[in-house]
Image (tube, rainbow, N blue to C red; front, side):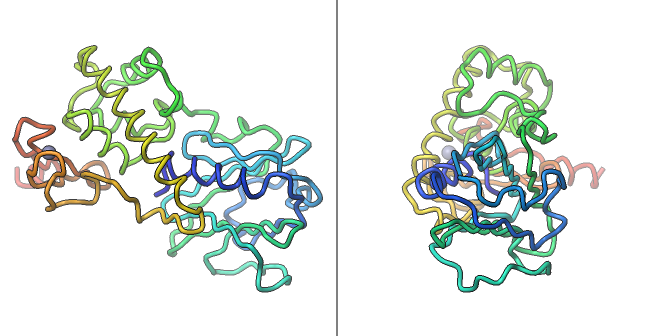
Length: 286
Ligand SMILES: [Zn+2]
């Protein structure tokens, strides 16, 4: 799932490549992906792309006259920039991976795609990004929040730090993968409770958040957006590395179920060497 670093890189790529170009046409192939009907997709035609921004994990393509195409890529969505399209025939609504296509006046453009059968990609054509419910409820941005803002946000929600870090209403931008990386960098147990974190632990967590996300943005920007793959991140130390050695201490990275998914962590770095109990499993056993 694309998180803050990937979406930041996509916005950066669009700023370089698309800003200044005019839209020929916005085509909607997955009707269910476009969550708004007014303004209509035809309202984008003829407008110039003026900016590309990020709010949490949302991408905002800005057109002149204050029109915004705000996109949440969900689990399997992506943006593919095309130097040219094979055909000028408009997309027909169908079951393919392309949800929305934006054609620009130099023949280039981009496709918003979604793999798999579960279609969760959500696009909104709005005059104000705050009209998008997921954007309106976002907490402070994980990349730019200062320590005081970050600490207040995390302490506003009592719970396991893994869950609180990924709650978009608490902090915008962090998902399952980067929360594993941040907690590993901060040497914190994913099950630590937010209201029991000391000021020192909070400061370490804040610094780790900025460093992990900042490094990932730098790595993502180094790749061309077309080659960026949401599932092929580089530089991860624990996430999706169950059974492999921790690059910091050499202990084996472990996995435990969390919410409707699983998390990865290093016992030596994060939990005093003790493996975390799988609560879902132990509940079944009991
Ligand atoms: Zn370790």
